Image (cartoon, rainbow, N blue to C red):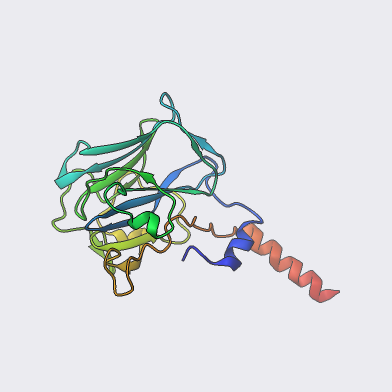
Length: 217
């Protein structure tokens, strides 16, 4: 999960992201009125949004369409290395704010069978599902489903998949079923919490060497 303090402490010693910034879907939820995504800057530099070269666009493609049904655009602000932004449909309800999640309003219209993309400066950096394909009810596999679930990015994945996928368990893990109306109430756990990059082999080797040197003193 995203909240391992031990791993976070280790990761703070050395950032292990791609050489260039990459925007990745790190969390997704769909359940009735809940339609939201979290995007993560998995790179090593801040991304500053602007309308000319770094326009952020998050699009949903409904019912197998190859053209966006709706596109949210952000042409100002920034996202620092390792941080996340949440975009959700909060205009008609207070689900997200009541859950203590900081988010930006986006009038998403996707259901579990609709694809989504992130584009930065016109280039697709990541995709949910597969644009141009209608899977029926949802994309599903390995207990992970794009309908009626809150799902988050697997640990160790730092790059987007611009080609899309048909099995969400390739990239995501299950967080909660029916996040709008679960047995314990609204369950949007994990949203707004940045993934923790895995420490590099070099870092782990260095920590191991430090421990060996300490034992030898």
